Structure formats: structure tokens, C-alpha cells
Length: 309
Length: 259
Image (cartoon, rainbow over all chains, first blue to last red; front, top):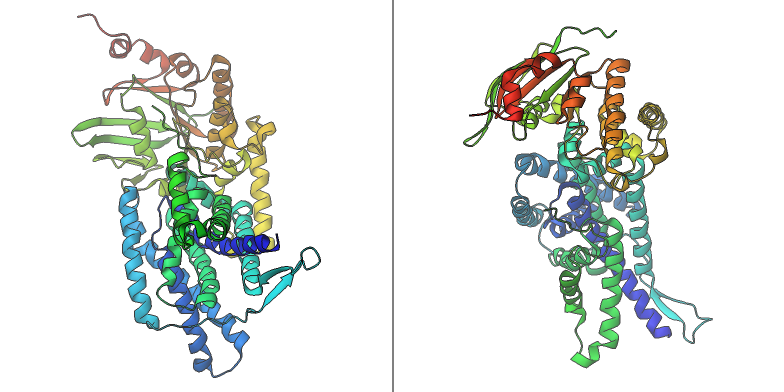
């Protein structure tokens, strides 16, 4: 039982991180109807900015304080992501208003390659590390309940809490502010939103900025676990089955989808894996997503697709 | 007695074509201040296209539209909204997942001055502004008699009431000119009477100029001051309801002619 719980917790925490990346997809899809292929590249770009600024800023200003350096690097990385959002709206989206979805999708593919290349030009192509001072040592909990207790990685626990707080803040922002209301309005109906004077361009910059900040948080957390390197952009591929499962249009869906994938992946690896000789963690999520596409193409929480004829 | 004022909206020789299909051919008419002006015509006559030209959704190939003497040709919906023109939609374009209150609040978007950061941090001025706008929206909700539905997601409301929310959102913009695209389509007699009353009240109390498209001839003749009749993208009649009713072209367009 203790071992089962340990696997379960492990899965939940990885799942929370998948959710964080999936959230970036959902935010942009909801507000502009674009499936943003560049989300993974944005995670990488943001993480690289963070890692490099952390090295550069103390050198530029000549101080040696880890916390200050981290805070400044994080702030600088946020500014970089806002600049990226602004440039994307200016140079790409603005010219593609009212175009087919497939056109926008191809445009985000282009943005992906650009961000990957430009990121390496700006920040270099080595492997960098992010150290925001998260504790690495595991802790034992629930020792009273089970013999041996449950082993939890403290770093994962912190990451999960940060992700949860971020999601809560975003939900508040969307539900409680006038700008959040305008964002939801644009998501529901572009034309109606324009007719009441909501500026599409500004809304898009805000959404892409928010998605950029979410990418930054995801990049920092994944980066401090795995190191900042090119393969970080591939983590985003794991978020694809998450959004298919949860529904592209649903924020809660992204979170629950992430948790299901995280838990499913770990549990299946432990309990079903041995039957296939192991390694099913790698493809489990995709097969699950495939099954969902057959049975419930709009995902768990997505808007039901009804065609009026 | 309402006072009909100067010309506020002047549509001048508008032609609009989609590829080879001529939606509108050389349409001219004017709308006076405080007036209720109807555009009628059989299906496919070009009524909605006309409205979409005024609203900036379509850019006509020829002709100009002037609002208070200010000509605009290449404008998008947002710029038109800033000039004080609001509209409702034939096939409801409400924000379905949002509550009635939120839907109508979006109409106040242009009146809001506080920026994103003040809102996100819930600073005093932003909160005060939200409260002021909210007060205005509550008055609209009272006016349209939809108080019980304030917090209901619009998608779950009956059709007739959704039409009222659409009107409410347009009213929240405090428009000078209100464009109504078939405000009574698909309604039963009672709902039509309610909607007619709201339109007359808006016109009366706020002095809003109203341009409306409608199929129901009875309603149009009852509430409008002047009527434009379109058929196959051409203007075939223009005048008071009585004049239009006796116009032979109009009669044949609606009832058909004997050959």
C-alpha cells in the first residue's frame, strides 16, 4: 500500500508539471483558436533566458547574491517573454486575422523553429543549469500509517505547489478582472467582441504574454530538474495527450488531464509494464489519447462539438 | 412627443459584391437623430449586408457612409464601436459561457480606463471603476427586466431572453446609433410585444437612434418612423410606413406579381 501511494504521488506531481505546459496550450487556444505548436519552444526559450540571465546579471552589476540574481533573472525572463508575445502579435498574428485555422497553425510551426534557432543564437547552445534553491532531498511522510512510510521528493512537492498556485491565480485573473472578462469574451466570439470595441490585438498580446509566463514557470521547474537543454522543448510533446484528454478549451481539463496522464503513466509502468517488458511509460500517454480521440474527441471537459444542419 | 433631429447617419451610393454576387447595388438613404428607421425586404434582399457595411464588418466597394458628417470607408468594427455605434446580431453572438452580468459588462469595455496591472493587483481606482460600471449595468438589467438571470450563464437561458441580453450588451456601450439585426426573429407574439416595448423605450428615454432590420411587417409598421425596402440588393422603396405600404413595387416584391 505504501509503495502504491508512493507511485501515485510521484505520478500526481509529474502530472502537475504536464498540466502547467498544457495550460499554455489551452490559454492560447481559448483566446485565439490557434493550436500553438510553439509552446514547447517557448518553454525552452524562457528557461534559457532565465538560466543565462542568472549567470549574466551578477557579472554585469558585480554582486554575488544567489537570491537577488534569481529574482532579477526571473524578472528579466518575464520581460523577454512579453517582448516575444508583442513581436508575435505584430509580425505574425496581426496579418492573419480571419484566416483559416490551418494557416495559423502553420504560422506557429514557423514560430517554433524561429524561437529555437533565435534562442540558441542569443543564449548559446550549451547545457545550462537553473538553481532556484529548491531542496533536492526526499522526505518520508505518513510513517505512522504504513510501515516504512511514503517517500516523496521535496522538489516535486514544491513544484506541484507552485503550479497549483499559478493555476489558482490565473483562474482569479480570468474570472475577476475586466481584462479577464474581455479575454473570455474574445475566446467566445471574435466578431461580437470586436463589435463592442474590444481590441483583438491587445488581447492577443496579453494572452501570449500570460502563456509566455506560464512557459517560463514550467521551464524553470523542468529546467531545475533536468537542466536547460534542447530536449526541454520535447517535454511539451507530453502535453499534447494531456490537452486531448482534458479538452483543448478547458483550464480545469488541462489540470485534470495532466494528473491522469502523470498517474496513469507511473502506475501502468509499475503494474502493467512488466507484462510488456517495461518501458510503457514512454508511449502510455499517447495510446490513452488515441483511445480518447475515438470515444470522446472533444476531451473530458471540452465543449461538445455540435454541428447544426 | 419625440423630436426628430438632423441627419446622423448618411449612406451614400453603397455597392457591395462578393466575387460575382452583387449583394448591394447603389443604395442610398439617411437616418435622422432619434428616429427609428427600419430596413425591410424579402430573404436575401441584402438587409444584413447593409447593416454589416454600416458596422464596419464589410467594406463596400463603392460609396461612403457618414456618421455625423464624418465619412468612414475603411474602418473595422472596433473603430466604428468607438464612434458610438452598437449592434445586435441576427444569430445571437453572445458570450455563451459567461453570466448575463459579465456579458453586459463587456459592453462597458470602452468606458474602462484602468490598466491591466491595476486590475490584477486590485488597486483602488480599478476597483472603484469596476463598481461604477457595475452600477450602470445593473440599471440596464433592471430596465430589461432580467434581474432573476443576472448570474445565469447566457447559454442556458431561453432564446427570447438571450435576445434581451444581446440588446443589453449593446446598450451598455451608450451608443448614439443602435443597429438591431432582426431583434424579433424566432419570437412568439408575447416576446415580440416585449421587445417592441423595449425598443420604443430605449428610443424614448435615451434618445438613441435606432436602425432595425425586421421580417415581421406588422411590427415594423407599428414602431418605425421611416422604412427602407430592399429587394435583390436594390432599394425599391423609402418613406413612412403608410407610403411604403401603398408602394406598388413593394407590394409586388412581397406578394409577387401576376404575369
